[in-house]
Length: 96
Image (cartoon, rainbow, N blue to C red):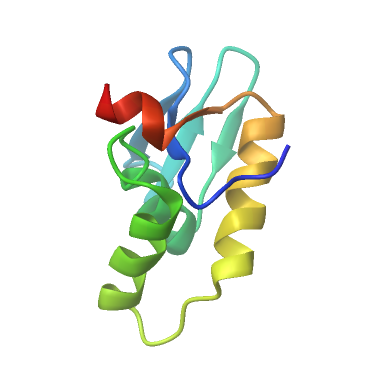
């Protein structure tokens, strides 16, 4: 699965993004696993609200960070979508 520029990623219903005070890091909680995220991963996922497009997420990240690799963000989103942690809504659907 590959993300398209117009996709509007959001966390799947069974997935939660939380800050774990014991670890001092954000974690992605699924029924099967806990994934510890680095700061960049958490920043990307916080923007996955089902409203922003992938292009919009990359643009927002570029406003926050000096260097953002579009392809790296897409690979990260693709991996999470393949694990069914993300749902990729279509931009056209959001306009209806």
